[in-house]
Image (cartoon, rainbow, N blue to C red; front, side, top):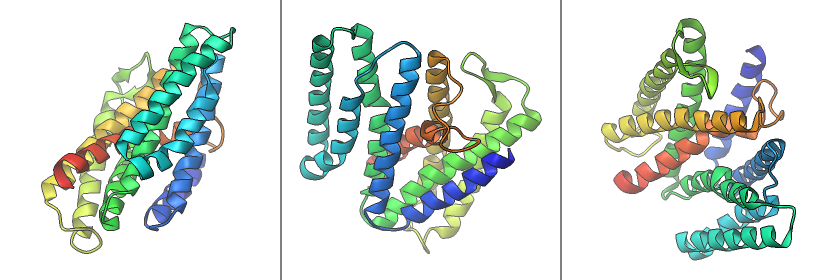
Length: 268
């Protein structure tokens, strides 16, 4: 636990510091984490006996930002289609690959590559102060949820939430994490709205925090399901006490999709 806190707190502060800077650094950080996550996922699937096409996932992740910049969402879908075609062609040309390797290659395009794209899309929200609000809602709420769920679950957890996926997660911890992160996050954002952030309706803040918190739990469970499928404990060992990039950012990835979708439909 001590190691988790010593690594987790500085990492969270680093992410928030980069978020507040309207620069190219956040894009590079998202790209770096995304590429590392692709390698981690490929390694995990290798241990499960599959041979996904790693290079198409890396190329997709690297080109997804310029594709969006120059061609918008159409460019992203076109890039996805091209990488899908290459996955199929590569599987035909490389005889050792089988049909399931194609499926796993496609899976890597969808996860974790696409969720990192949503993190990037949050960064591009205009004006920049609205982008910062959305990114904080993604990172802060997901981090609060993860921390509170761990402590509450350790102390009060009795009923297992998904024992077949993550034996240590409890219903009490999940509920405590969601309620606690929504309440704390909502209070913090309400104090900042009108000062550091745009003056938006309190209901948007509340429902945004709720969506981020719920999808943070879902993202954590998805990562646990993949690890259970691959029969591994962690995706990597980059962050002591946390595991790899995917172990640390799994809750952020689904939260980013929820927050960008909410902002796109109801706020922007």
